[in-house]
Length: 157
Image (cartoon, rainbow, N blue to C red):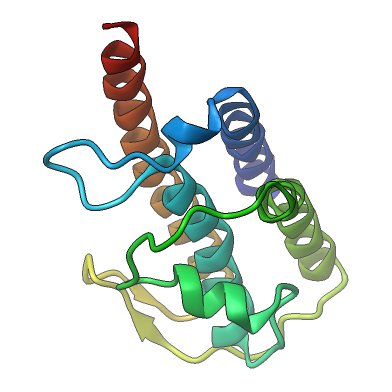
């Protein structure tokens, strides 16, 4: 499990760097052919980890439910966030990953409600959820890097 937590932290550092270096107007832009933006993908990663790891373990997520409702699976970007909201999610990128590791090491996760993901992977315990979450975050990092490449290219013109 140590490697899963390590990779998650490294992925979250990359996402944080992208969040901080991307001009705000590009964080919210949705290029033709896409359904969401860099901002939504980053916030969605934070929210999904909380759902997969905490909610399905019958535990209260460490983030506010309003964020979960705004960025969970099936949602789309609405209005651009404030600088404060960007900082809030930026802080959660690392803290939620660190909290999950601490809680795991402290034996907080005792039960798990089996869940079948949209990719038909069955999660039976928190270890499955943590492993799948890493896969999920990798998918979204790929989308974010694609968006970043398209938007920076468009910005250059």
